Length: 132
Image 1 (tube, rainbow, N blue to C red):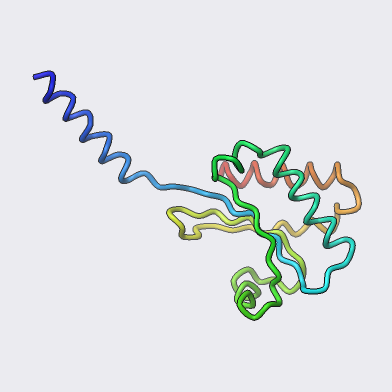
Image 2 (image 1 turned 120 degrees about the vertical axis):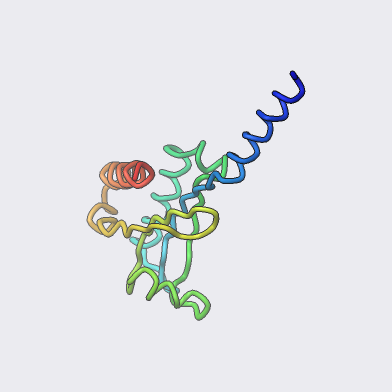
């Protein structure tokens, strides 16, 4: 009887585990091939914020940061995918590797000159995005 009960619990666990979706967040910084000081600053700020505010999420693989030259031929599709034509910071939510939602953090240019404002904006946007 005890063995049957343990097998039933194991079976339920395996079924639940197989149906759970793995959600991950990609933070994508799109830049042009030629980069200005502001573009480099935005990338550096974003990287620093992720390392300090979201270190656990980065370490456990929940968050992944990528810097992508959207003008390179193999990356040009991102211009249509995310409706971008300039440097942009995109949050992309993926379940089991498939994108289910994304958001363009279009105020990065409003705050890049002030790290504290930039950090507040990015942190709040990421926190809101992961709650949705």
